[in-house]
Length: 213
Image (cartoon, rainbow, N blue to C red; front, side, top):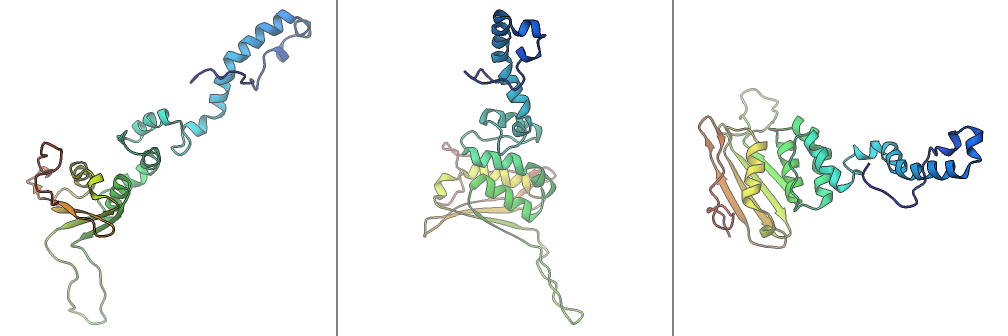
């Protein structure tokens, strides 16, 4: 039971289930009426249980509990709509983790911007044998994010998002640019030997020291 709601009517009143003798007793009806007021929020919660399990409909404070079910950590500074989207898309993000599409989707949820991901892979076809192999042999990854205000995106946090969503052995660069000619900010990280990518050390304001202003 989440709380009492004054005047909430129980869908299953106890008085009508009493023997006919007690249904004519005012005291018995008042007693069961008091119990109905206590039980009404419980019945309402049970009747609306599917909504509690839906990230789009769950109460705000219940969303944090749902996020634990799918193994994601919510940022309380995010708008509630973005937190709901992350919980709803968590299963799909896990399925596509390590892919270009999965990385772009996760960064888009985090930043709320337009995401372009470029890697060294490519595909092509040719009517003749011996054509040029597409792509490049060296692994690389470039993430470009376009938002209204580049300073609203924490590069340190974005670095963690990219590092955990990409293949561990692939070096990456991040660039955050603004619409309408705003200045760009970026980071570059190389993968650590056998230990996945290493995020740059943060400065006193939480911005990586190699950020470009």
